[in-house]
Picture 1 (cartoon, helix red, strand yellow):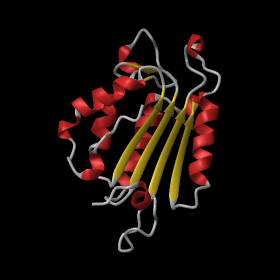
Picture 2 (tube, helix red, strand yellow; picture 1 turned 120 degrees about the vertical axis):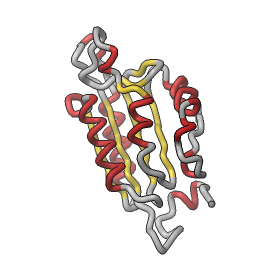
Picture 3 (cartoon, rainbow, N blue to C red; picture 1 turned 60 degrees about the vertical axis):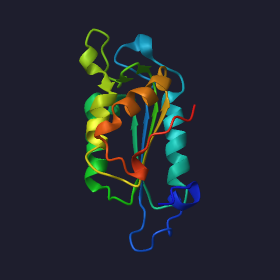
Picture 4 (tube, helix red, strand yellow; picture 1 turned 180 degrees about the horizontal axis):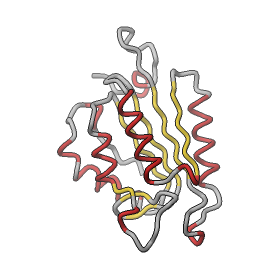
Length: 170
């Protein structure tokens, strides 16, 4: 299967089942613990969301910022997307905010409760519910480099189809 950018991002590449694009943009500048607040994460997510929304492709965008980007809000959105996505669809998740070695920090993260981290394992459990043409995760966060090794070392449960490979780009 051709997974080149020209094929993946060409809405007419497979005329029998048109590719749809689902873009989840998450940006957190304001955290429950104000010492964690950032200056530009929310703005970055809005900008990425706007770029995809104006791309001319059949894109469904989902924007979660600050108080909407709780652990429950992110999980519910990912579940919703996976429920409506079809096998020929492309999913891109963009996250800008704080990260940890094991996951991302939602806006309601509490340093006293490690369960409040959205772990990569939890994300994989949701994303592995269905095979899609492409699943992409773009992280603008501390420890984002650990995500590639964390996700690929745990991806043995993923369908090892061409669209299910994770590639480290930085």
